[in-house]
Length: 151
Image (tube, rainbow, N blue to C red; front, side, top):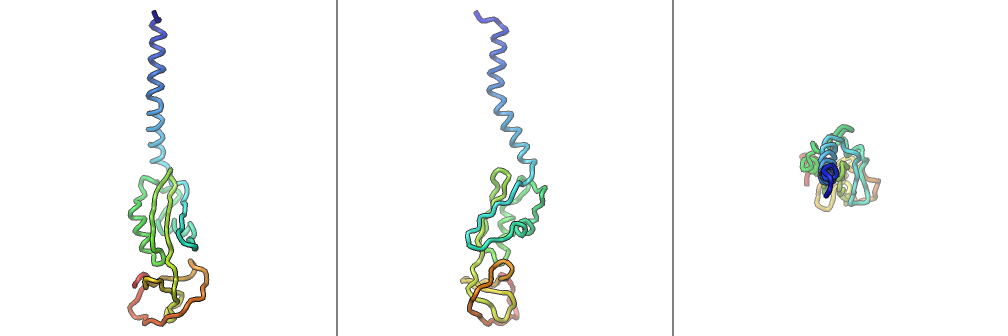
């Protein structure tokens, strides 16, 4: 027959074996929700990419920004409202903010506008400093009522 002290010790070990991983997982989840975004990872789908500082400024991120308070849908809408970004997707993985985006591809320069280009869809966007200088055809458009992001 097993002495009572060994049975009690075995029960304690089994309880620790079962409950410690649950406690560790809960504690890790709580600490990750209270921590800040560790880094911004860019996934540009085009040849040109944006400076990380520009993305953090547009999304109003600081070094104390919490992943749990980051609204991903709002961040995507903000990025899509930038005239030279055609596509944007924002995700958080292990406290890292992943930003997948595609920049518009300039097809022509606007002769009547300084530092402006138009893409295949007819969207007007600024060219410099986000794109390298390109030799593109020039198009003359009336500049009366057009704005960046217009078609």
